Image 1 (cartoon, rainbow, N blue to C red):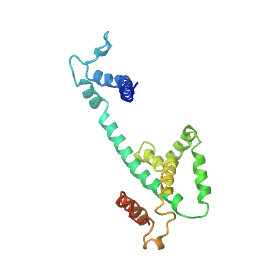
Image 2 (spheres, one colour):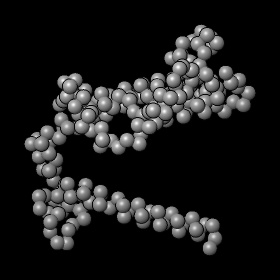
Image 3 (tube, rainbow, N blue to C red):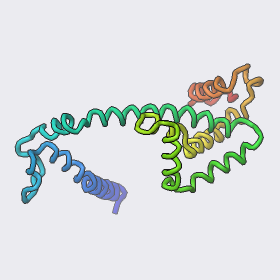
Image 4 (cartoon, rainbow, N blue to C red):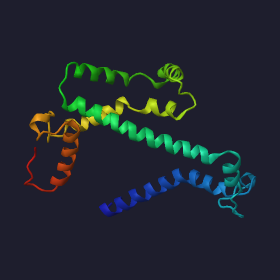
Length: 200
């Protein structure tokens, strides 16, 4: 079998597998446009005979799905932005700054990764209730403000950044730590593809 034949065979199998996986999802979308009970007939139709939007009207009118979508969008947006800020600052500190107990604290955080999330559910709910955040946006956003895994990822990325091993505000043109962080990111982007660029 030639290389071209193997490539065609592999791609064909991948396409077939993708269609098999996607078929139930595509059929559910098709069913959503069918009248009530149409999908229960035998054999079940693949496409709606008389497409209708009644199911979506009922979903948004009677079940307030619009409110649920708005809540999900707000929570996901704020949790992502806030966690990005905190995880980046914490990961940068563990990778670039020298302070007493740094490695011990980081090892303790890594140890928390092996604790199942189910174990922390009840204590977390008790804490949220004590803070008066039950049934509020804060009750969902606050627990997601930072994560051990996010801090770990940022730290590992910062460690391989040879442009700046240890942050030194006094030795980097007077920049404070936020300035160093931003300056290094832009400098690396500007130097990408230029072999003669001097690394700081």
